[in-house]
Length: 283
Ligand code: P6P
Image 1 (cartoon, rainbow, N blue to C red):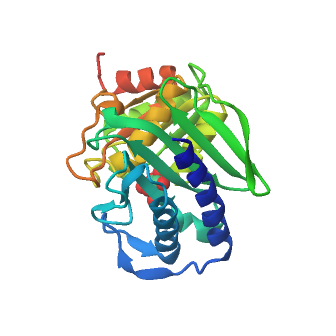
Image 2: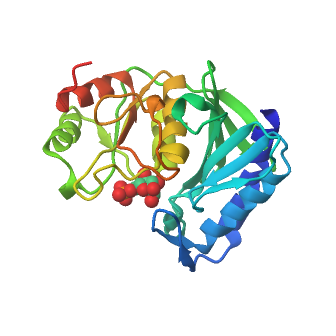
């Protein structure tokens, strides 16, 4: 697995350079979720595809920016599902964005995730890597190298509330949940970038990020294989919880299609219990 994480480190520097130098315009194409692609989305996707092509243990790739599965090395062991530049539209307002990687062995389902990682392109480049049974590890770039900083642990209760989606499309239960946390003094921390928003909660010790089922997105917006499951794994390894709108662990997801989405809640145990109460979820 080391060669995969080393490849992600080199990808991080290449994409960071592209963010700082590339044309921010839109390409003439859409991704599989029907979203207009920035040239930077396509460029980041190509950087990742080229980087993993030479890693023999990587069998194939599933990208947010591509429809199907891309075969790289038939003798490979792992499938890497990734979002090359999540929140890319935030680049042109100079906010932080990220890349997300889920490493699967066998059928593409949450129970077959063996590791996950994400990169935050912000004032500094930071990388978090999670493997089974280990606390997620934070790395920080210093010149052209990543230095290990510390393991990440979520406290049982935090202070941050990151409510995604359009409020007018939330259910009454979800609105009651979000307002209930604010009435307890929680601070709103939401940039519209999943990676920096979830990274902030992890590094500030706790809180909750929510992207519910809404009237305009009844199955949620965030993609299971390369956004939801990789972060669910990281949050659970950090001592937090990650569930859907029925209270089912996101690590039990079995996507029917590579671009399936899911309502998702990632957070400290107290905030997840508040969510379950607001949603009338017993267990
Ligand atoms: P909304 C970015 O487009 C993204 O996919 C995630 O990074 C982010 O969490 C979410 O969408 C934001 O969506 O509907 O709250 O603007």
